[in-house]
Length: 495
Image (cartoon, rainbow, N blue to C red; front, side, top):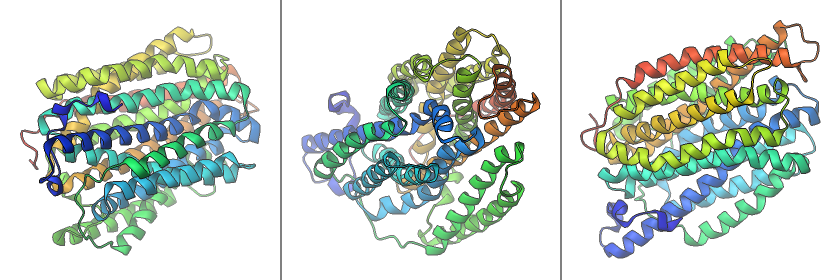
């Protein structure tokens, strides 16, 4: 993977390494990016293997979709709680120690999940995995912004998108193949040696490319952040359970509590950022380009995560496809998204984001409305395949420009906070998308009078999928509207 990083794309260097020889800096930067990209590929592969396997896990553990969603919701909840701390962590520690903490957590969680005899222990393993995953993505994005020259960031982000799209493309088919011949625990036994290998290599080879400074950790901010985001995600998760009368608490209660605590958290950060001691510096939102791009990405993520949780249910129960074929059907779209990444990055560097995100948002809307009205009982798998390809190609045109435009508009000292903010909002959006789509899916299934929601009939699964994707289609219109206002920042500072 090192050879894929062009020397010209790594011209910019951190201030702490200004005295190093240029050739040594370029080699160090290539090594850092290659290892971080490889690690992100591993954690993304793990995260996306769960979707196709979820129906089989539900059948094995005798749970329904509303309970099964906790395997993704708990993962997202943990990410949302941990990610705000990564802004502080990446300022306080250097690149290698942060990498070591992240991969160690991922490996430990994978081992716990592999040994799990019960659903509760499996969820615990996913939570520990999520801690490592939460650290890894902001670490990679901050490193890219630190060592890559401004005029080359689109190109490098395009190559980052290869990793971020190929892993989700390969994950479902790998998961489907493994589920055919192994119990679900086998998914984690396969990932364990891969994670251990990445940890061993990283401890020795990941270079320190960041500049650290002593930043105080505000304990109250950490507590407020954990309470706010966990309450919000928990409340959202209860929407699905409430749809079938199994909610532990009325969803609006934790949502209101979470929103109130979040307001206090925001106030606390506004006070602390005056002395540069905020856990999550919200001055990132003073950049108009950052705010608009992040809003568009967040709306797209709600629709995307929701679609990813419902599509396997539809393919499994309405089309009657085995997990292997579900994964195979999702493979072409992900691979095409990865192949499009470098081209999109080059186009961004040349033309800016707007000529890319506008057609990308329109493609997203077209895919969502096709899912809503083009799929049903008796539908051909070809329609699902085609719509999924359009969806993934559209996301390639959305995410690479949005990442580059949002972070590129910030001052360098805000890169880690910008990365942490984006990652936090993505996880909350993912939890919201999962919860809302599952709730609508469960409502649609229940509305048919199906007596067995754990194994719904083809008609019931089709009705639930239609209701969920209808919400995705409506949300996609907001993405189109926001795309009209995305622009490329003129310089690398706040606008």
